[in-house]
Length: 266
Ligand code: ATP
Ligand code: BTN
View 1: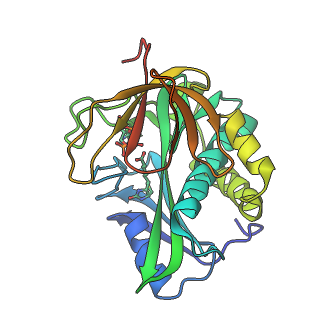
View 2: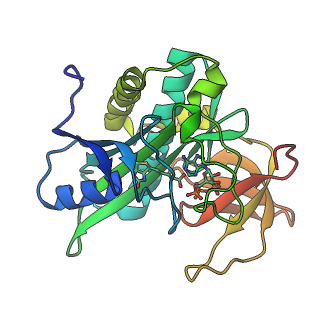
């Protein structure tokens, strides 16, 4: 880790959520690119109010504290979410030869199963954006995949896997961590370059496919799913889809879940 341009590193054997700790630490003045990492999370969070399963000894759970120069929240969150998903999928592709893809906006899939999730959150001091917390959870060993009867599953759980199951071999978590961090840090200064969007686009799952676009209302209620064909990733990181009616729509990061329309995994 010594050769990576990180700020400070804080490691915990067990913590509630690395994202929560990082948000507090960011408000207390953590240096740029500080890292919170934990072996176990007892209150790991996914998007919305959902839980993220992180039992000890089997996963990577980390949060990187970033201090974007442009204080514009939604575009930053979208690109930084893409950065997290790109960093993980490039690490898995280049160093482990795994066919990792990005399920927009925040998931990494191998063979249509979710192996990692990204949760980028803004941390505020009053009305000033003080940091963006880039949280990443990777299922490394099979024990980190939530069991079918896990109480934290939401009503539409997506099939999951682990890096070791996909590879058929053991994986050293520290080595994987270093490779992911090196990827993240190398792309970080390039988030507004077209190359970044291009590299992200190349890893998109379901490009050209029909998907169900499930949007949740802020109060937790859901609109009926729309069906759309994924056309492109826009330059700002939003997703261009064509609806059955022919209408073109750009989806921005929010409470949106994609599901393949024709999937044997469902
Ligand atoms: P989506 O429902 O499209 O995955 P999301 O990115 O918001 O949307 P969450 O609901 O926050 O995802 O994450 C939980 C989903 O991820 C569940 O579908 C679950 O099956 C899958 N998953 C894979 N690995 C884990 C894990 N370690 N902990 C929790 N959920 C996991
Ligand atoms: C998702 O798929 O919805 C995102 C899951 C993000 C999980 C990571 S684990 C490290 C960090 N701390 C958290 O509480 N969540 C993120």
